[in-house]
Amino acid sequence: DEPFFRGCTDTNLYLQDPDYAKMNASFVMLTRNEELGDVLKTMRSIEGHFNQWFGYPYVFLNDRPFTDHFKGQIQAATNATVEFGTINETAWEFPAEVRDSLLFKTALEDQNDRGIMYGNMESYHKMCRFYSGLFYKHPLVSKYEWYWRIEPDVDFFCDISYDPFLEMAKNNKKYGFTVLITELYWTVPNLFRTTKSFIRKTAGLKENLGTLWKLFTFNYNILNTEDEEISRWVNYPSDAKPKLTEKLMVDFLLENRGQLDNEEDLEGIQYLVERARSKMPLMEDSIEGEDYNLCHFWSNFEIARVDLFDSEVYNAYFKYLEKSNGFWTERWGDAPIHSIGLGMILDLEDVHYFRDIGYRHSSLEHCPKNAIQGESSSGEFDDGFDFGCGCRCVCPKNEEDIEDNSTPCMDIFFE
Ligand code: GDP
Ligand code: MN
Image (cartoon, rainbow, N blue to C red; front, side, top):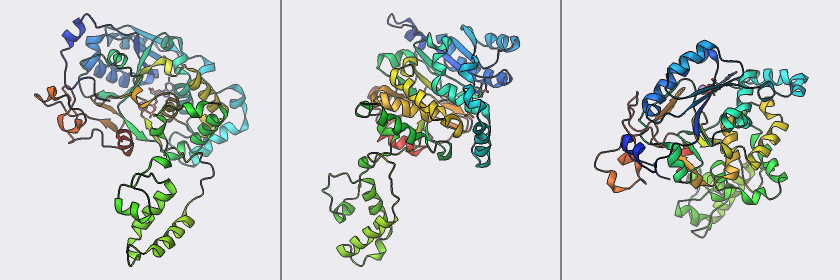
């Protein structure tokens, strides 16, 4: 999965190419009237770095009507078409039986007590639920084939000199991201259990899980010991893939190496293995050695096909999650839900890492290096760290390289 372009392409020539076709696509932003200033900041950034040349329309959604002032300011910030939509009550609010239940109020308070970020903000729960399973049903969104999600207070650091929608279509990509991070465990303690329950109850699904699933599951069977010496200790054929329990033991052995008089001392090793075993948690709930590694595509940036979500499996998944009440008994984010849900239906090749799109939201950012002139003919992307792939990137902190290696999830992705 290489960047579509390394460095800048000549946007005028790109647009004049007879093969260029503007896509059926739109920016989508859920926001509030009060966020106008930050919304304009985001628009200035995306217009300046991309949309002044490509003119893709915007869709703004809100649970309340946008004010005339908001609409006027937004329209003045772009030459592109802008549409404003309100979300009807049934899509935004929790179902009436939930709202009326005694548990509802205490559930949010309880999350607050436990220090869960946004735990007692009902609006935040509603936002996560909306982005998890409902945004793609909104008529202003569903009429498009592709969407690019944006948020207030976002910076783009590089020029995007080509059309990402078109390039994704050409390259058979369905979902694109810039940042891949781990979720806060206590916001989703039961999400994966519920997901596995969904899989178990959905006949045939298990066999058909996309390979992307592997990215989000801590699959005990794919762990491997790289240290040949250790493999020898525990008697693995060199190409065998030890299970997690065994990996834990090996780690334990390594830590306790000093206790062994002689590394060949099998009795000593067996003794330590027994001790390791007695320390290990029982994983009764894990099916086939799977657990959630908490990795997820950070969903405030997404470029994707709308029909990924409005699909049989994903819709059924959302329905199942909704019934389990996790959108309010816990504070499930739309990001892990998108990632796990899509993990069930996509293969890795369907996903595109927009390594070349410099991006910041809140305190997280992804900053590509600019492509080095003269290297672009090499066609070598496997070591993108060295040659860079960005186009006129200006990153504020001027950090050396915060690309690709900023989170453990990225390592798993590359692996
Ligand atoms: P964070 O990025 O996870 O901290 O979440 P945000 O507070 O930025 O919310 C995510 C997106 O949903 C942003 O685009 C917000 O403007 C929007 N949003 C969050 N809560 C509400 C809400 O109650 N009403 C509306 N209309 N938009 C919301
Ligand atoms: Mn945000």
